[in-house]
Length: 73
Figure 1 (spheres, rainbow, N blue to C red):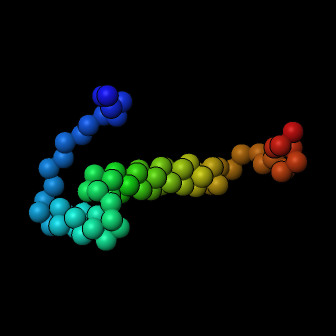
Figure 2 (tube, rainbow, N blue to C red):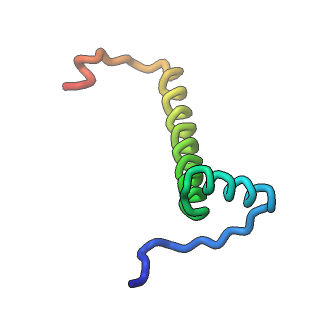
């Protein structure tokens, strides 16, 4: 049965491959699973950074402030 996932072919430096192989062996997981987990983590960090930027921008905005009770009406 064909997979619904998209296949991405990556070429990585030898040192990165060794590190991925070491992690895969250490965690008793496949190389692809380790790489996918690391990619997920990186994307979460990017999302966190973007949300932090939005929060900081809102924090420095000097518009009218709402009380907590008013914001949740």
